[in-house]
Length: 77
Picture 1: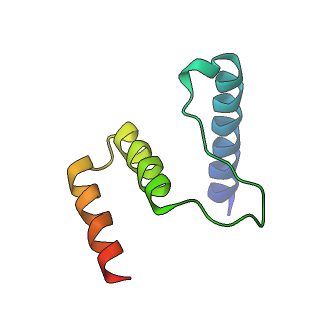
Picture 2: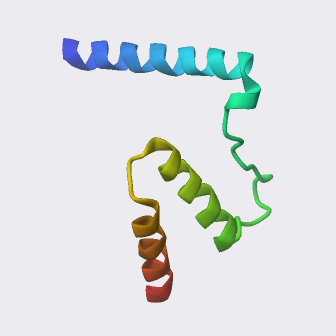
């Protein structure tokens, strides 16, 4: 399992570097919404807005496709 330990070490170093950079550059970091524990969930609109921004920022997914997927999931519930 030496590969797993090396991967874990690199992940910790990357997260640490990102947090250090984010603290030094708060104007460049996306705000993460928060709520007090036990006060309920975020509204569906807030969830959709947040996750759309996250996926759009990474370029990992086509935003229009993601929005259609979210609407489809909501329609099934």
